[in-house]
Length: 465
Image (cartoon, rainbow, N blue to C red; front, top):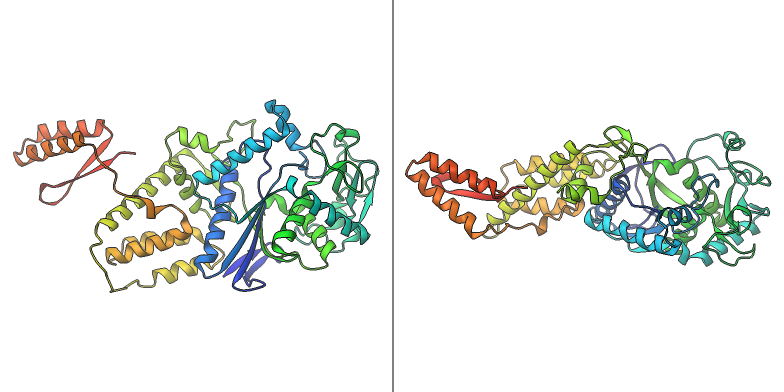
């Protein structure tokens, strides 16, 4: 399997440290507000990757954090804690905010059929591990202390900047004049490992004792501490959005490798953003959409998942309601095909004339995760001359990656009164009373069903979506 590695900026043959076992760490949500469809795309991509490894014969251990403390509104240690901001915005306690928006996040991922990670680790449950890692960094001379915080000194880590390709001297430049900066902070790129509960953070709700005084952890340290605890000092794949490359992931590398002396991540996997109608999602534009907005307009959440399958993970994706409508129609067609194929299976079929469709699917998956191409192979296969059983077997096999729940679809029960209308229409057609036939068709349609004429004056009824 070849994947694009942000660290080396090239496609690489993926080779896990301990084959066939794969360790996967994904940056989880900061639970201070509603998860939106941009987050949804990110976690669908994570899920597709997680599903692909078992499909290709690997065993996977997947860990994801929940950021419930320490993530400031500015990634450069400026601003206030996002959890405190969310609590103020919604007039809730910080702990209530954490629970409510964590639950909403999983409500969103469950609706999209995203598998839960093997381990979900909230930052607030791992303060001890973070303190231990900070101690290691301190003992190695990679930190310094001010009245406000414990900082990682990036000038002591020669490889700082390798992931983003930024010149360290550029990252060391001073901050903007309008951004608060600890006056004792040596370099703008230095980042906090532990904030003390003084000054601007004296009223911070979440705080713990530490060797450096009462306070709370910085955002970056949590991922390093928790990934090390559950996956070891070196992990195979770390995923995240492209917005994390220059700061968060750069800082993770510095503190993880600074503490262990070993390579932190073998392959960095980053995905691009989702826009809405070609524009960045923002509150000012009023185009931030949630899973509730999707459902309120009578769309199946899996149609949103199908929409995300159509764009490569490294490309900018765009959401429009028209595109979602097309995705819902394609999903419904796929579901109906699955139902029809199931109805055609009467016994074993040993012909196995798969014409290499599975191999082509695997090849696309193994070529930098070309999910749109695997989807094209699937539709081509369904239009082929394979038997119904072969098509169904391949479709359900491919859906182990797609996650569209096709194995669960079944013929929907048509109400007795609709069937009676269809039978009356059949009699009218036999009598060549086409006016009556049209009246009955319209009555069926207005009731939310469609009728399709097939051979020998028979018909097929379907529920309109």
